[in-house]
Image 1 (spheres, rainbow, N blue to C red):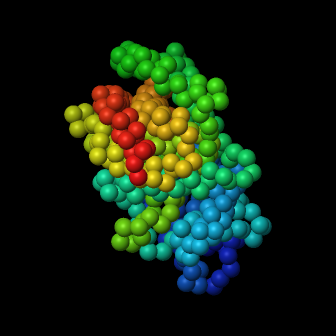
Image 2: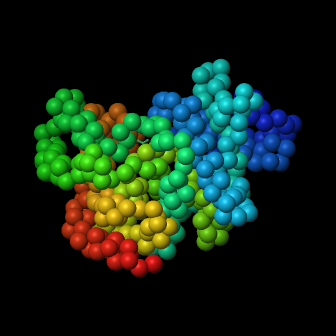
Image 3: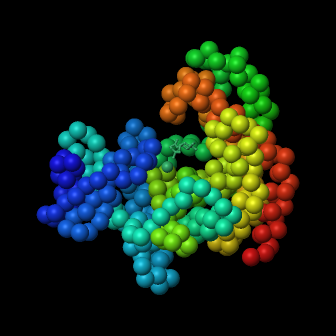
Length: 362
Ligand code: GN1
Ligand code: MG
């Protein structure tokens, strides 16, 4: 803890410094800090995943500065609770590199807030509204596209290319066991690469995406009623809006768990789908193009398919990317995601109809 206090001092000066572990993130290590009574969050940035920390911090700085400008224009008064605030280090940079080569950042702690790990239609609607407003505020961010912090992160063509390499190499010798699933993936490959094709044809734009649109990345006030702000901005980068929409549906509109082995429990929750779409379109409709709206439901299938492919790739590679809790965990995850995909396929016309209906209402 003494070492951590020294790191804190490279950002802010003070006498009475306290540091305690915070939360249970899988990627970065977080601490709650208090300096002479003022509260902060200190994070050690995982630079194995986020290889270019200066660009990472610059992305976050651009996004938060632009949102702050927008909030001021709207006359919002409690701005410090509505957007993350990075604190510069004494060297003027928004990160600090310690003697061991670790990267650190400090931001203000948002008081009296909470996040949710489970979902209801009511919560889904508010979450949709929050992510829609997030994209809406960033739609006119100056300075060109953000740095692509994980290249081709949600690019299906490139995910399939990696997957096919893994099938070919069959490093862990698991191919025979999963051949049926490989075939199912290949059957859908063309449909799932449609967004990349539309983009090349100039019909589908890239915008600023959040790229981790889980419900627990939205902070609510302490009563859980009102949205305060969107957090976890590490993966903000250029992408298709259908990706952010789809990743919420993949994680939030599932009646089962991401790695459920009881596949009967895994299916699309259409009430959550509808509620999120309603909230999302309310705030995002103003800037979305027709093609973007028409492909939202495809985004739900696409992100679920992508995750089926990513988990299976890791299983074929011998479990090198995702942490696993049992030897077949990646296969179980992949099968559960595939089950969710099948359920979305069965309900696809209803999902599309929901989007179409809500597009004209609100
Ligand atoms: C990873 O660690 P977490 O849950 O925030 C992954 C996402 C996947 C998700 C699947 C940087 O996110 O893309 O959808 O696992 N993040 C990265 O559970 O690869
Ligand atoms: Mg995350």
